[in-house]
View 1 (cartoon, rainbow, N blue to C red):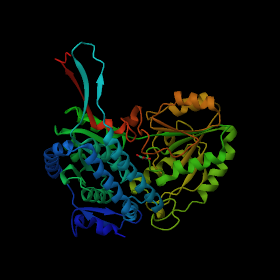
View 2 (cartoon, rainbow, N blue to C red; view 1 turned 30 degrees about the horizontal axis):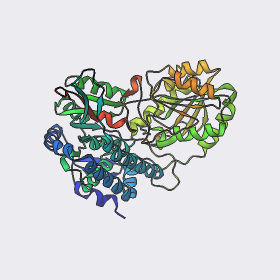
View 3 (cartoon, rainbow, N blue to C red; view 1 turned 90 degrees about the vertical axis):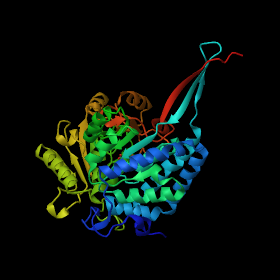
View 4 (cartoon, rainbow, N blue to C red; view 1 turned 180 degrees about the vertical axis):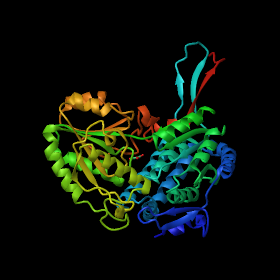
Length: 476
Ligand code: SIN
């Protein structure tokens, strides 16, 4: 079995560079080259030179390379999972799951690459033909987050490379190692070096500006905070660069009085505590009907009190560290604010200095919609329970947010299911399901949660231009 150090050997630096630290204990994991604006500009020029040849290859040839990349990812699954845990802190079992999830996007878009079909439209004129031709947008860029250091890259690179685009990736400063390992495997599979480059950098803002200002970059895909997404949108306006934005969320998790409570608790645990609550689609606000509250809270609290917190590589760990001290301080402040405003701890305890970068899993009851914890993205292992009286109130609270990414609904009433499908303002809904992500479905949000969709057969369209061609002189 290849160990992660072998996989990364060409990138590892003895001294200097970008130091990557284990969020659990602050220990140095490895150091790699730190790319500034000049190196990024050079990579853009190289990608511009290499992209046309990549685009001209038959889709089947690009697909075969993507398929080989997928196979290599799975062949190195354990090394990749260990790396993802070392640099992001997530439990190893979750990292293993992420490797499979990451690979699934490459497999999916290897298939979709072969299905980029143009159109022939019925002509309104005699002797003329109307065609829609699809072409890769050109050189693209991705700015990716630390919470899914593998999958958020492959969800963007799969469709970009499949469509015939080159892609430059600026991974999160905290998690460049998984990204570089993916790059190495992509090159080994046959993706030309200049066509797919990973550019770790500690100068996120400067690199973002270079990517947005470059007329060569025709599309930027970003996953991260709404605040940064808005900055990128402003910068991209100067070059009218196409954007995909997968931004923050404040998912409501609604438990109705007719719900299967055991299923709702299982879904809540998966949705809320996956990656210690650090996912954009995490349940952020639990809205629980008053008649279901007692049973739901008692069972959730019992499960949360039994959770094991520890290093992601330690057997049995369910809750790893948060990504850094700032993240912990933010979650702690939200919990303290809620407790001061009248919420109650139903499970877990407040963070203490000895906990370092770990935040204990918590359930809070008596939360009200105007508390900070109900209005901000928690990004930590805290379930905030808000009681509601009826469906209309639940929908009103659920939609009272600038975000619109995911929602979760537990009910056995089919008519209510259809009503909420219409009424909830979001891009994705799990009905009686706490985990919704899959490569085959369109992932993305509305309102301030973003623009565009990733994954599914729609995902590749984000990397394609449509060219309308009118063919005259076609008389029979
Ligand atoms: C995210 O948190 O941004 C992604 C979560 C997912 O793909 O499931």
